[in-house]
Length: 294
Length: 341
Image (cartoon, each protein chain N blue to C red):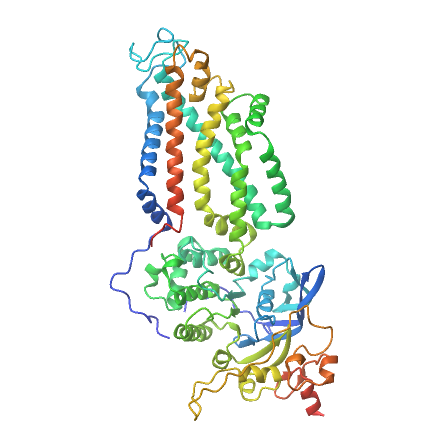
């Protein structure tokens, strides 16, 4: 048989990788692009803001409860005379760090549990799913509060507490994807050329389950930020680190005298979570094969 | 021809020898045999055809050679599968993974869905060599491109960067064959490799199989229900019915002089292209009835008897064993036993 049986088309279409295809779809969702720009701006401000705006966030710098625009401190001060703008700029770091690390922990536990349950099925599935259900029926906020109170409220412990209470939906989703994918022909084909279980789980099936997991990762980052705010509001925040949730919690008793003390951090949280949700929505579109064009 | 990846094996005797294989599926707490008393050999470089209707145990036999019988509910309950004298039914999972793809590989029926959609075809071929031979990334990639050109994919260097969805069915099956052959296995199992492809592509794929067999010297086990393909491709044919081998022989004798009534029926079922003199198409022949499910089979008696026009009382009572019918052929039918008397 000759080496070449089919003539080379004049202009062979360039191979398009799945990630490039996804980016094309993502760009078409304008709200998601706006969300991405907002999030990038927030990340940028959090990253370099404290270097540019050097007012210390934890120190009394002016008269307490100064409204915005009445002093050199643009957004005014809180009940201890601390600069709100400095708080926002510095608090963003903590809030976002907790959001991402909690989402990472959520995904790590959820994917591991879901992958093993979905891939092996049988008694492994039964045991892991009963554990998942146990965590599902625990009241999230209460359980997270107990974890944070038992172990001191450091940033790491707060992230772990949030991750531990919110991994169940990621686990269920991963399990469903694995149960669908493990029966696919290409998994059988990979088995037939000598792929072991570990390879099948991590290198064959998991990348195929990627798109829905990326969407879940984005959304659980938003949820984790809200969760952190909730915990801080109840006073369970790291006393050494300024965060948006803690600012709201601290200023809550003075809400009638100085509404700005809770409004600005509230807007910051709202914008960040909204941006992340829009991005999640865009990712959902980007990875939805029904909306995808060749 | 690329450089050989592994030394030649010097052993006497058949390359693969299956002895008294029995595969059972556990259904409602009972072990139901789906393959029984199956024995066959395959020599290096030969092509064995396994034919039979759907549900007669061809595919599960093929999977058992790779230790891939879905468990649960299935398992190999009896017999041996000897690869160069090593019993694969006793091998552990790690050993089987070393055998799969390296000594024995398989091409499946569905090229459209048998490739992983998230990796390029080059990566998938290269990964196989890396797993079995531990080649460097670059060397494995070169080998993948080389293999793509061997299976007749035009401009393999660019095509290696393609994702499966960018290829046609025939091209994907070529890629599957490239993956199966990249480690130069001694045995290639092809389970209805062209059923999902159209006729012209089918011919190309079979040309490719024959061409590659000459170059790589692999034995091929070809599973099909297309008698035309068997006649064109194979040296020896094994007919299976309801989990048993009922006839075996050279392909010429199988076509010219089928002995078992079931084999005769299979061959009569091939539609003829030529128009009869009357210009009225000849009626299509069919074997009445369907393959009985494994659960319906009794412990004794010929499984084909209910569909056989020659069946007698003995057929329903006793299971016929394989009976030699000259020049290396055998058939499991009481008619042959009686004719020989």
